[in-house]
Amino acid sequence: MKTSKRWLPLTFKIALLTLLLLWTLIPITWMVLSSFKPNDIITAGTPRVFFTPTLEHYTSLFSSGNSLWPYLLNSLFIAGVSTLIAVVLGCMAGFGLSRIRIKGKQHLAFWIISTRMAPIAAVIVPLYLLFRYLYLLDTHAGLIVAYLSFNLPFAIWLMTAFFDDLPLDLEEAAMIDGATKLQAFRYVVLPLMTPGLVTTAILCFIFAWNDYAFAQTFSGPSTQTIPIAAAQLLTQTGIDWGKLLAIGTIVVCPMAIAGLLVKRWLVQGLTLGAVK
Amino acid sequence: MMSPALFLLALITLVPFFSIIWMSFNDVSLMGGLAFEFSGLDNWQRVFTDPDIRSSWLISLVYFLATVGLEMVIGTVMALLVYSLTRGSNIIISLLLIPMFIAPVIVGLLGRFMLDPSHGLYAWLLNETGLFDGNILGSVGSAMVAVILMDVWEWTPLVALIVLAGLASVPEDTLEAAEMDGAKYGQKLLYIILPSISNILLVALLIRAMDAIRFFAIIFITTNGGPADSTKIIPIRLYDIAFRFFDLGYAAAVGITMLVFSIMVATAFTKLLKRQETSS
Image 1 (cartoon, each protein chain N blue to C red):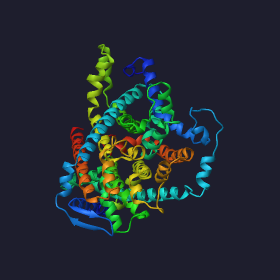
Image 2 (image 1 turned 60 degrees about the vertical axis):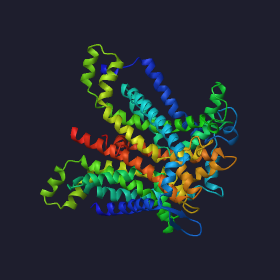
Image 3 (image 1 turned 180 degrees about the horizontal axis):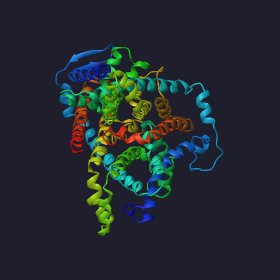
Image 4 (image 1 turned 30 degrees about the horizontal axis):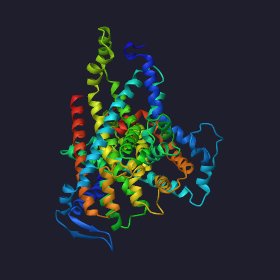
């Protein structure tokens, strides 16, 4: 046992940690739990922990007239395609950027990172006008382009950081053995990049899946994503909490699981490679 | 290999970039087809004289300082606690990380659910304990506190995760030596731990700073800037100007001022990265 790790009185430490865990977990747990409650228990004046669970909210989400299916499919399709494009192009560009030695490289890097950091509200205004002009409002392509505006620079930047970590010797050795640059990339470098690729893909997907502002502005009746479904229910008078909490659970759970799957590389991903 | 990506990126970022600059010098009308009418510096004059904009920047500043400040402090405490665990730290950090994967719109939904005056769990708790018995999201002051705490709830884990990564680099033997010499926890924290993670803390601060101005969905879905504009941070104000009043030229000018802020953050971030490269 490392003595230097015992810093604080144990009871104090446990109390503080418990408090932080409760603060973090109560809202999520309460949401998931309540999504299995009948509506009259959800809206009862006193909170109830024990009840007979019901799946009525989930079944009504997928069977009633205004089904969640189209929203779910839109979300999957739009987030999926924008992720695919971002990762493929980002991987190629990241490899190039990591290996190339050119003057002004830092300006290029700065341009990429600043497009990723651009405030969404500021990006929405010109994009709205351009989309209107190009008839891209209420299209899947429009939202895919909108998500690429932050996912593409993110993927390029992050893949560059991942490639930077990979020693040059490997591809050089392959090339000495007669492989072309492309073969070295395909058969030596790429297999080693699996964690980087998966992490980038999962994070891109989460960013697109979780977006609300772009979808709210650019989507229409045929392209609305799940966050929009939640927002629509939320702005109605007489909120159907059961349904909403079920949607919340559906939006949150897969992303939390996917995110935790790449926990090992999360720091690197979310700090854009600044922390290893 | 980089050309397809860079070409596409240029297309989807530079075209909007030049559009927003051009828009800011025009009166943009959407009624009866798109129409631009050159208006010189009118929009820009308004940006710097409009009291609503000034108050929104002020609210943004408060929101920014409160959220990022609390996230840094609580996140660091969280990381120190998890780091000091001898076992179970893996599962505990996983649990603590969950909020940051949640869509901001769902965080807002959760906030409204927990704070609902008639049946929200937190509203009920505050009421029972006599701490607060009004409509939390409907009153000036408490609404601001609530939206700040929702952001803190979602993003503190990110700070904790970053700081935790940094704590791995704290020199173990220095800590042990200090302990032998009878150093107290506070002394070790102040003189050994915090100095050796200062760079990491800066990374966390910059990452949060850039996202604090990027996202606005939580407020959008909970208070939409109300009550009485008390939570109307600058992105919400901009969205109102653009899509409620359809004053797109003016919105463009406001958007550019926000861009300037994010470019400053990006500059600091790349400088920091460079410093790390040269020091390692």
